[in-house]
Image (tube, rainbow, N blue to C red; front, side):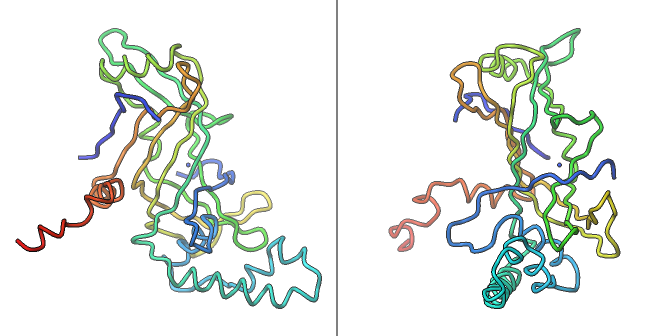
Length: 258
């Protein structure tokens, strides 16, 4: 059963408007590819053809801003870098990391119903379903739709959890700026044709939530606090290993002698 954890001791985006949203995330220091590039890797890895690396590079602002004499070397080096990154990308293991600004508010218990905590995307209607878009070539983007994301925009609170939220966010029905951090496993991609939205052509990809958390600026100390997080059942073992202290990940030498 899916689990949603409301943090007790607070420490510390089907086809509606497909407006591009910036996909972001922190990359490992030793990883030469970015999260925006990995979104494109994910889309093509779910199909039968790789990206056109030379077209990808030659369409970039960086390439077009170079003096002519440097363009060939840049094209070669960046095509090799992207090709290597694509070859190493595994859609079954490599998650896409996304951070998105949202507005968060909560309501208290009323008429026998529990309190609830909500999030919504700024300047969007209630039924808006966001896409997180990754630039590819020229006016083409890969646009990721996160399956079941809307289920987390309205979460019931137990009495205990409501009291904890209220302790840090003093005012009901007041909008607080928050951040969603989402790790997504891409699962499906439509390679038949892109959808034309304005001047952009968007290739659609679907992903499943592996891990997600919501943080918000607190009234109590002005610092960002975690309100809740969620781990998908299929990701629990991997997540548990990731958050486990290093000294517990490996057997003690004494245990190996048993």
